[in-house]
Length: 140
Image (cartoon, rainbow, N blue to C red; front, side):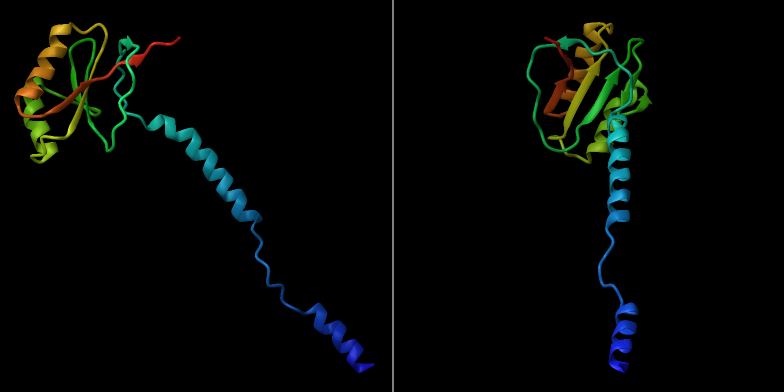
């Protein structure tokens, strides 16, 4: 009889060796939702109304330097406004002598075409080889 009572007590006090994964799954789902909401907001942030084109997208590796030209002629490297005279020195400082760095020029559709071409010509004349224009794809 003692063994019977002892067995019942032993079963009652036994440690459960299973991991409860429900809280872990809950936390991971919340993180997934947070990242899904914030990821689209992390794009380069200078607001430029790009012209539309039917050209195909470029597939390339690494992060390019983005130069934006706003409607009023303001010049930006990534999200920082710069003076036109400081464009080349800043690019040389950012690139650390790497002339194969990709540079994308985003010009507002209302910016004079000559200003965009002049900016690209300055960049290319300073030795950068990979300079490209950015446009939106036409819908339809």
